[in-house]
Amino acid sequence: MDKEAIQESIMISIVIPVRNRGRYLENCLLSIINQSFKDWEVIVIDYGGDDNTKALCEMFEGYPIRYIYVPEKGIWNLPRARNVGIKNAIGNLVACVDADMILGLNVFEELHKHFETHEDNVLYQIQRININEDGTKTAMPEGTFLGDFQCTTKDNFINVTGFDERLWGYGYEDLDVVIRLGRIGVRQHWLQGVETYHQWHPMSPGYETYINMIKSKLSWPSPTPGPFADKDWGCATRKKITFNFIIWRTIDKFAIALVIWPIKRFKKMIRNIKTWACVTSVEKKEKQKVLDEMNTVKCAI
Image 1 (tube, rainbow, N blue to C red):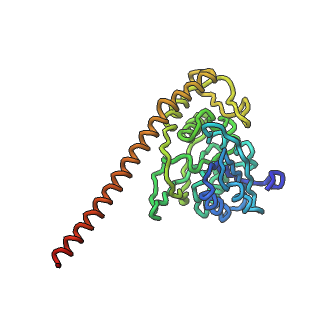
Image 2: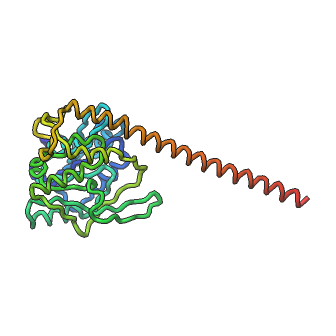
Image 3: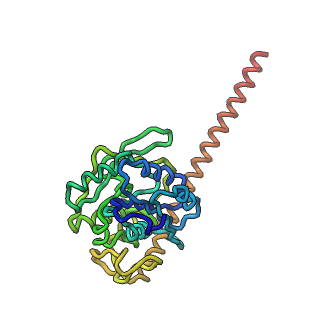
């Protein structure tokens, strides 16, 4: 649905960045469509994906769901995808939701009630419940997994220039924006009586988180490059150290070459060893089973 076709009375804009996770996105969109509160729009930001996400969004024709593709080269950038969604949002409130989340039935209703009776300077978060591989559920403590659902006014996001686009990949960008919002007086509030559900899938290691943790303390004066970047977005202003962009990208490359890829290769080697050991153990058991059966036959004879 075109932006112009969406009524300006939209209260909540839901920004969903997604990259090759269309199979989880469908459940996320269905949970939004089934909300008791209907004054919303969805902006799906596909950052460099090559799966069926666009076709999936087109299946929901008639609902206020927009699809925007953000091309990526090299390492993808989740914070930039979120910023694109925030800048295109119409709603008073902007909720950044991960594509693998399922929202409880009354999330937006409770969000609207609280927002109507409290000041604007609140960042809403919701407790996460993990849906495990075997279908069981595990409730996670409040204060963990901040990036699953983060909602505040669009003005608040603008006032901190959005998410920090130097934090490539994913990891720590959610806590970073919490800290920066806190510095302008926006406090966290965990909504009670509602929850979000995380759909199980194999998790990537997320070594970028540790590098991003260090990067969030650094800064440079030039704007972040990219097709959707401008001088006012994606460059947090509360940093202490200033780096030229070229120097920063050099640090990035060294971090990738010397930290991330070696650790990933090591993890892959460990997984291969575990797989080999498991297969070997199974083969030994099968072989022993055959020998035992042969011995049983011999004894019977």
